[in-house]
Image (cartoon, rainbow, N blue to C red; front, side, top):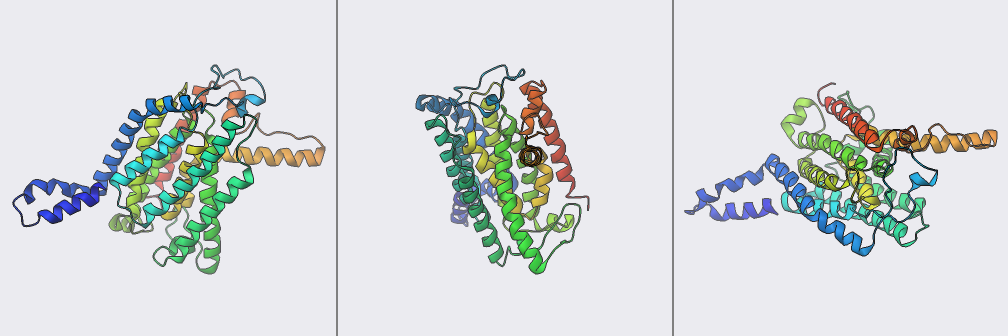
Length: 384
């Protein structure tokens, strides 16, 4: 909105006496200025809305009064404070702030519109899941197959749309991997693999962030770090000279996604103010599913799905621990008649809680690992 308003004023001022006075509005043409504005706007909006929104959730009694999955299997030595009763669905605030910020600061091209559309769908799915848990105390929320169907349909729509658009078709047909500057697969095989990869990236990222959301500040803190990586990647991918110099895919219009990433960073940091230990509010699936999904979509739109695996290493480890735990348990139960476990508990953060780590220790150490993953991901820009 700011960009379009500034252009209207600048165009109207041409040849008039007040042209020199409105010339500073040219700043809105620069993505870097709008990125900074989006980050600050989202942060301030989150800090302002936070107390009001938490109070509103408490009035609605949208609290976590159901039994936390982590507490179902027994007592944690490291878990000092009970999370029962803490307001959830804080993701509504995060997504609202992101939307308002992007509306104000971004140019609404196709890239931004696709990302915004998916954010709505994933938020609706997460809201339905959280609401089911709250209103039906013994409910585990939406059935897994329902969530997966919605996620795959959304991911499939985006993948096919990108493939059918001549300007973005190469994002699907040419498979790029980190640290290598040429496509490893092209043509028909590349197309099939690319469509599958795009779908798995979006769905996998959405669920991985959701699985990470189990300790105060863990998921949102790591999301902010990954968003920072993709803020840089989207800016480079949308800048033809930088993209050519660094020998990565140039994607016209993708620079506006850096405004989206900046909004996620600002909103995430603002939410972390209230979500850090001991949390005053949880984002719930209403926040984790769309945030993870958006990271996956942005990675696909700038031709960097494998870099997301590196940048989101903590998310990958969390999701991988669940897959390994479930798979090994089913295998050993079928083989030996008794299910066995690899980890004391999954997702991975609960394994370390079981080992006696305090919640704040787990979160801080996972933050350190997330920073390391972010540095390695950014190194892919230059190391080829």
